[in-house]
Length: 185
Image (cartoon, rainbow, N blue to C red; front, side):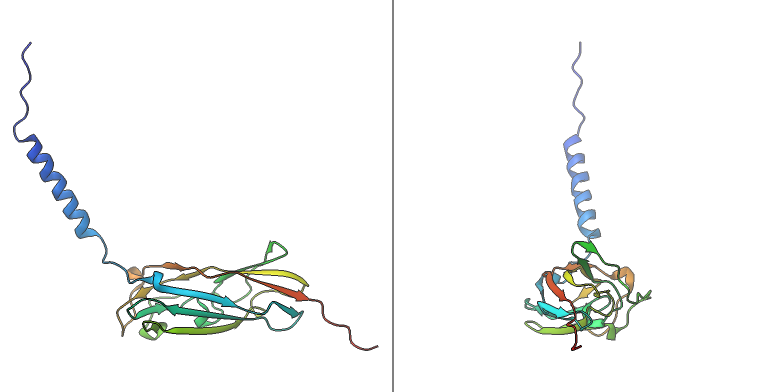
């Protein structure tokens, strides 16, 4: 039996294919996104309220990074209630969102908020507007904020195809809704 000769240049071709594949993968990778993880969210609100009272949630978002970021404000507290960016449970049961929902095209430059390095922005919204808080009990508010686009470039909106969505982690909050006090008889 004759030994089968090794193919000439086999390793060289394999190495060339690997280099070519690595180069094409690197060239096709999207440009790195700005450090959305530099954004830090804190939610505050009342520990308890009486049935029928406003339940003001106060969100603070700080850019802890060293560069300015532009954040699309859609479906965030900075826009108000135009999307369900929090989940709410009453005694463990999920409540439906009763607020408006918008369908949109591409954003304009003024749909972005600029967060300078170290800058904090605040937003306040009334939880009682889009959620039914009419029953006494414990309500848990869990933010589910998705930043639909974060960019370092200022001055223009980006097409939806260019968006890079990122979650914005934020702490949960418990609010106890107390029965209304009976008036004098």
